[in-house]
Length: 270
Image 1 (cartoon, rainbow, N blue to C red):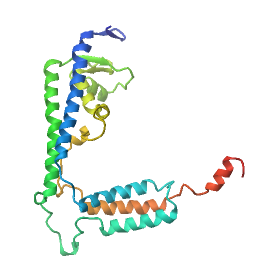
Image 2 (image 1 turned 30 degrees about the vertical axis):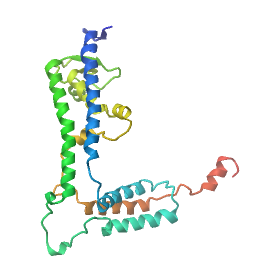
Image 3 (image 1 turned 180 degrees about the vertical axis):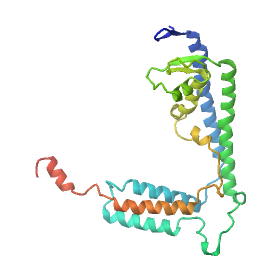
Image 4 (image 1 turned 90 degrees about the vertical axis):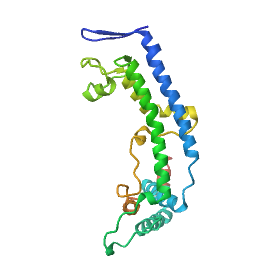
């Protein structure tokens, strides 16, 4: 049946053939291309070499510190374990123990930044990232051109939930339709493409059975930055994380504090 929406003086009817020959085909093509893209990314990632031990240790140290400080409040670790672990970890981060390259002496004056092209591991990471970006971008450019050529200006679906009638939502959902008075819940063909592009990762995880090969669309649109002047400094990141761990010590609390009193109070045996 045709979908109808009533306004103050207009009613909009959608031909069921738009659903059958535009909405469903665009969705099906996006899903199939997404599955194919995941398989191609998996093939590209399977050829990558294992990372060196010092590189993994440098990155995992920040992850470990973050996990420790995030559990500082109501921590399952008693003070005899948490506090020495946090202090030792903060000291190691401040001293650069986990860095693959020790911090250089800054008293000798500024030194030239290292050339990222001289590091084979950095070059391999850049090439892998560029391949992933190409796998993401090329199919999407083809699909966008296909939709613009055949389905430009089509209204496909009416969202079943209310949305704020702001210019941001209208430009997002009604891209390619010059109707300023249309309800914001109506979605154009090009907007449906963008909604599928940014929202299909959950369905792809179910279809491929895991996260391997799933690429965040926003991350794929971010340019790769080598370990050069524009990349974050690992030494600064470790020192910043050390400060966060020091702060976590001041807000630390053990989940077992007053456990006996809470149990007796709960069962009326206080």
